[in-house]
Image 1: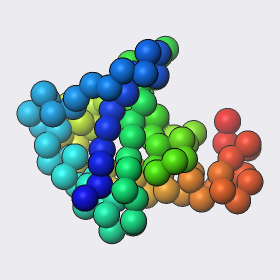
Image 2: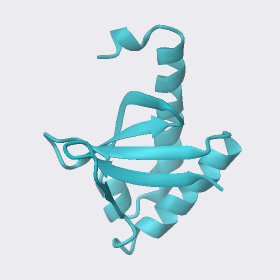
Image 3: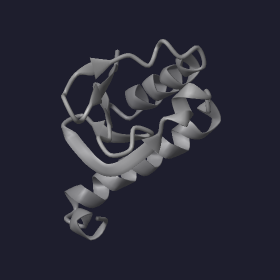
Image 4: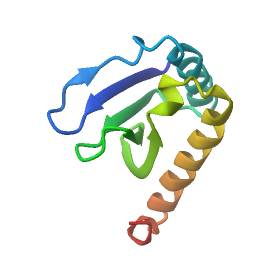
Length: 103
């Protein structure tokens, strides 16, 4: 089963998104997506300068791609698969050496 975690970039402390009642469906959809794409770990890092940005990490790869916190707090499950596909695309671009152009 895929492990999904949330951390504050500023202090490295983990926090839970499960306190948001609408986040459960989004987290379930991310877990299904991650398992079908063979990711054991998905991590979201809260930006220290903008608390509404969660930077995505797929496996060991921290990406130059973020998801807005409203995806979780407002339960926007219908868009999360597309967003995770974009994150995977960012991972592939980075692995191919194009990540330096995305910044």
